[in-house]
Image (tube, rainbow over all chains, first blue to last red):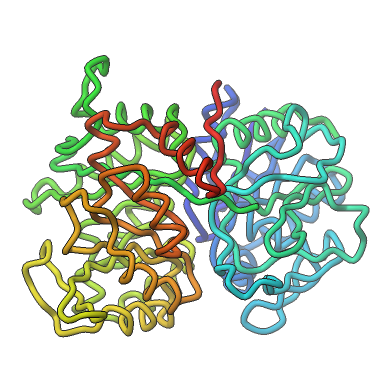
Length: 208
Length: 256
């Protein structure tokens, strides 16, 4: 068992790696090497910043998108996308113009437009998870558990069948999404204390 | 519903806490990591380190502190103090910080905020504003702990920083800092209402009611405090219970 956290120039990778190292004895690699990703049993795509930049960053790593397709889509290996890493699973992102996503889960990444104009953007801080689905990666996480969010855009899936959890911020937003061997969280499990560590632990043990 | 964050701030100098939790049971009370763990267990929502290291020889100590903290504490960590270049921010993020707080460097070169936000994303760029009352309803940005006036209007500056890409503002009232008289609510409200991003209120907290007022009257999204927590006057749990009783939505302290 080993975890590959994909380094494509985005985000606080150390912070994510530390959380994985904390809950598992397996090797945790922060890597931009497709062969290391191919060798890993679990794959994590983190991401902070803007959708278009992240997509560009990922595309700039030679062979990485092809490798992801090979191991995640064809190989069925457990995959976790975090924040923009989760948003990249969508068909299209609307941040700074339209950018194609990986199109693993049909849907669009749209700006949060809360009904109450007094609500601040980004949606930043601890908020409750609702509508939790029965899913191995969410095992032991209760309805109303708090997770740490920071985002201005959100995943609007074409089908609610892929929604695993929601969060209320001037309306329901996608908090977690998934299908088959892939899951994605809008919140940061690596920053969500006990709830987040539980999710990471579940993911490591997950055998989809 | 999104909850109001309570953020303890630790002053770190040469890798050691100079203003921190006054708990006798810590093995090494001067170790920022020990203190971070205390606050993590106590239910703090985020943590801020303010690096007040003066000597450039010891600047790198903060990276080691951040790295050791990130190994043990799994909540958002912001580091401020001496953040002057994109490289400084990159080193903090690589060490395990989640956000970097920029102050003086933004005053000297506002475009640094834009450069930083474009490189790392707005979500990890906090701009710190130290503001002082210069006339009724008028506040000016100061640097160097409130000693150096800049002639910059605080509310206008706040808006400009957000336009340049700041994802969050840390607003400190230099009139109130250390006075325990409560936040400057008029200033906090003026800034919070003027910008779209979250504002963290800071400076002057002496009672738990002050924390409540920062949110209900100051319209802040988060409250930062140092001394009321460090010296054991109140715990994070007491602060949260008090805020909840006053109708402020908080994340309950989880007992592990």
